[in-house]
Amino acid sequence: MPKILVVDDESEVLEFMQRFLARRGLQTIGVQAGRRAFSVYKQERPDLVFLDITMPDADGVTILKKIKEFDFQAQVIMLTSKTSQQARKEAERIGALDYLTKPIELSQIDAIIRRLFASLG
Image (cartoon, rainbow, N blue to C red):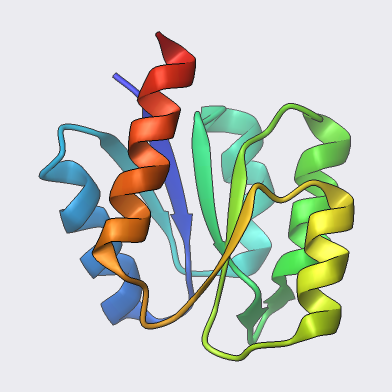
């Protein structure tokens, strides 16, 4: 069963994403504090990460960089409520798979999950 890590400081977004993914039969791990995200990634080794860019205790792009340095094959989707071309370009340069703007459309998440299942066989 694919394991998905969701990192977002907004509890409503975190809970919504976890419920949505669990209803699709996926194992989810939720982290509300950005600083914990990297250590949880190292411990859990999820198949996919949804990572908020703007959190009060950590910058999602910095966390993405740490994750990619640890595991260059990590599959990370960036989330944000603000559209920042600079952050988007930096995340893409580091290796983020995609960049979703909140409110996130459920069809986008479903498409990402279908791609994940296809790549995992």
